[in-house]
Amino acid sequence: MDVSVNRITNANVYIDGIGLLGRAEEVDVAQPRHLMVDHKGLGMAGRAEFWAGVDKLEAKIKWASIYPEVQVVTSSPFQVHSFQVMGSLEQYTSQGRSAELPLVYLMTGVFKDAGQAGFRTHQNVEITSLITVYHSELYVAGVQIFLYDAMANVYTVGGVDQLAAFRTNLGA
Image 1 (cartoon, one colour):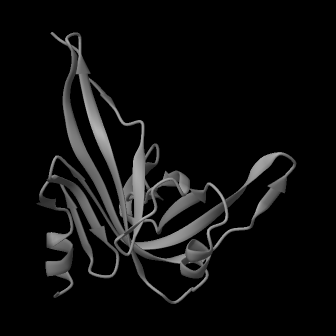
Image 2 (cartoon, rainbow, N blue to C red; image 1 turned 135 degrees about the vertical axis):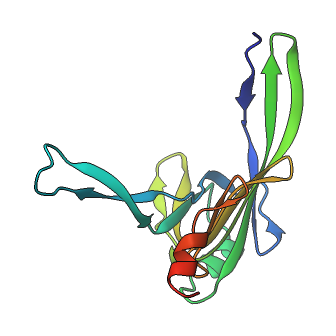
């Protein structure tokens, strides 16, 4: 059995279709995090935890310096933006690199914190912006891995609608 290793060592960030090559130092993308709640009842010897929804989504971008065009975009709390994080997923086997696949995260949200500039002697200024995300999806090689949209009550994983029965039961 041959082991396959996946590696992503770089990416680019786009806001509203504008590439920010070299301006972002780190990006934490928004991915659905399940809310789990405890259940305990009479006659149960223990507790169980059950799915109760999806927690709010948040993303972070750590900027490599101060860029005026970025500060303008990140400072408005009411402007919704589309975000793309694009990378190259490299696959390796014992025979070397076997594939390079496109990896794309798509998000929609608003900046909740433009970030504070941190000044240090002989070091570049760093700023981290926080984003409240309403919509997030991931594609690898053009195949959708997941899609979550908080406002539309849509959550799809591997092509399977996780909330179909929920929406039906609510009359939606």
